Image (cartoon, rainbow, N blue to C red):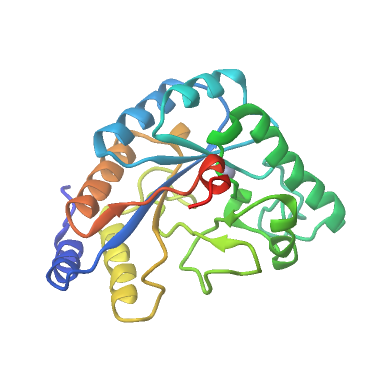
Length: 257
Ligand SMILES: [Zn+2]
């Protein structure tokens, strides 16, 4: 079945007609090593001229990942928790950074994540914290600037740009994977309508129009349908009001403007 892109195209046409622009960013989670899938992700990023913010798991990230990222300027490493371990009890949703253990222990993991990633990637690292499963307690968010982070990224439209002093929220908004069902591509027409609805919310004041619009992928589990849909969606956004957005990396943050 060919997806029906009309609902999104109509919304994009309105944005274009009004001269609006959509800062667009791409986050991809769970990297630890160089793989053929990572190669494919990197190629797609180059084709689209849209960088990928690669949320790597600090405890497990290895030298092969460092080698690839070092040679591919379109791959921007960010910090994906510490070990991607679930600390929630079985009757709660999985999380590594909610308050299921002493705060000091949680913060120690957040600090270890940054330190490990800085050691691996140096100034190429963006000091963005991406909690596994997009879940984190507000008490932990408040402590992130003290741990050295500048950005926090979870999912759904942000309610406020700065959830705590010194930390900026840059979320993701569309994830094409049907995690609770087939773990393949969710119904494409539903994804298209959802994207269109999210953009309309921004245009009509229901959501922050200045927040970079984030597409979230997981390159290690993509089938062909997910690759194709992701490419088609990003292409359409970029052909319309979408403008590639890149999070500042450490060397840019250090350098005064
Ligand atoms: Zn993850």
